Image (cartoon, rainbow, N blue to C red):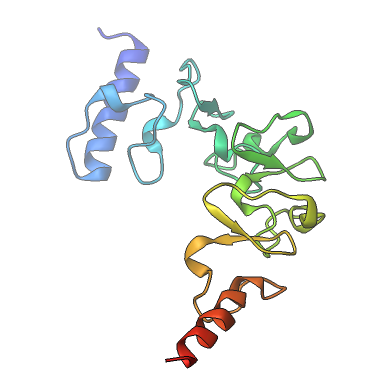
Length: 175
């Protein structure tokens, strides 16, 4: 007779095969990455240890540390542990902690003219912010994608991304 854990895994494996409509081997169950659409292969993984850069939900499912304290509930099945105790959470590298202390957003969301923090703190004090190297900094401190500069559309609140157009237009009018 098979022990209960083996029986459960075999039942679970059979369930996944039928539900997904594809062969699904047990190496993918509790491997720290959701391989099925709803993450069923990561449920009931209480004894599973998540790999580096992943965080363990209360159900045992592993999610990216980028999804912890991001303002969205990423753990499945009414598990809100990824959004609990965010005041004590240290945002991973490349993420910025909002002033309310309960949300981490990507660095490139800071000073992008769109409030991404629930408290809108990512759009405060932008005159002192230095944009990532891949972004263009508006004169008022805001950050926009480089491809938005000189595209004949005002993207910076101070219109500094289109100052080049007046130079180009003046140059072209001389011909």
